Image (cartoon, rainbow, N blue to C red; front, side, top):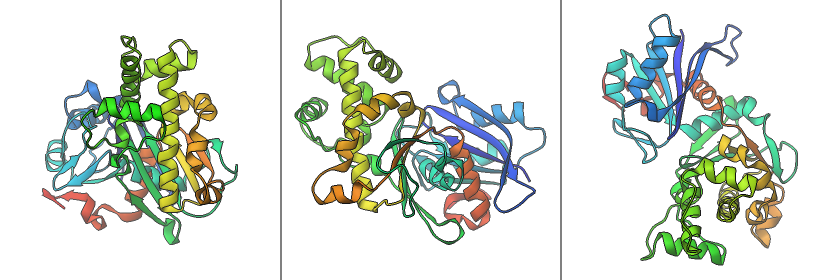
Length: 336
């Protein structure tokens, strides 16, 4: 039977109608696919209903959601989502039998079994696909990360909230930025710096440090100006983001011993790929001394997020089945 698979981020929602392919062996057939801007809808129910109204002819009773954040009781909790998501309410409103949820980067890690692992642009390290644990990391509205551990039946995926780790400045300029963001000290998450909104924060802070009024109001405007070299603070902001991302990715690669490589996902990085390649990302990724011996053998690619999130969510659904994934599911009105 066809089922809904959706990848819900802080800015965009990608929704598909999918089913297992007739050929079996874990294959998936996409029957319909659309991308929505989350800000154009007041709730997730309204967004999914818009997809159902235009793309679906017969009733659909099963849904799997890949969402930024984690499940706490009946709610998906994340500061970067456009609206709160209450799973029982969603199930009742759309007339679904079951709703299953997994983290959005957990879904991307499941997609490593498919085309996600083949379509990236090489950034640094060996230009080969090695065996071993693989990371998928992405700065977007937030900063997500998950690990894929190879093994029987597709291996195991470990989800994380690594973007919430404390930001650690590396350069004098980064220390100045951190002091400006948190003048009285305190917790500053990595994703408050290494993300789309974080890029805007860096840019505005650099303008303040130079005594200038910010001219750019969106992350997209900052990256566009940086690519065109039309704004000195935008250029420096992108350089700082790329360098900080290198430190973050290198930290995770050491923690997880990611010998299988790292995939940096998202259109945000793809749009600044040449700047990223020329930046201090690689040097900061490699860290120093004994860490360099390990990290120099870890390949890093940049890949488009695209439809991979819904593909990974569908792979997870077919592999586990909703009834077996009790900790992720809301069935019969009870949050698990």
